[in-house]
Amino acid sequence: MLSPTQNLVQLAREARAVVQSVDWDALSVPEARRLRELGLDEGVAVEMVHRSGVGGGPVACRIGRMTIALRRHVARAIHVVPAV
Image 1 (cartoon, rainbow, N blue to C red):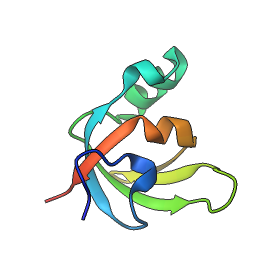
Image 2 (image 1 turned 60 degrees about the vertical axis):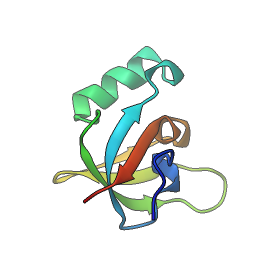
Image 3 (image 1 turned 30 degrees about the horizontal axis):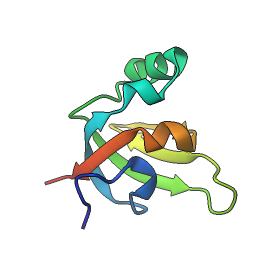
Image 4 (image 1 turned 180 degrees about the horizontal axis):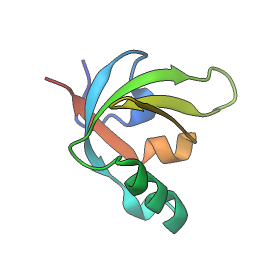
């Protein structure tokens, strides 16, 4: 089960969650703008698709019908709760 403080990187593969909050201060202005343009904001449903194993590479998540890749530090700024 997910805890309320879990970030997107910690989400298990194929797990579904809802974005509880985004630490906008941890992101650069272009990164924050990109997330908003992609529709990734509080209240949005997400699903973890892929997390690279070694080396801290990117993660891929699904938002609606769109799959996006995020750098790990960006994904760590996105806090999620279990989807009900």
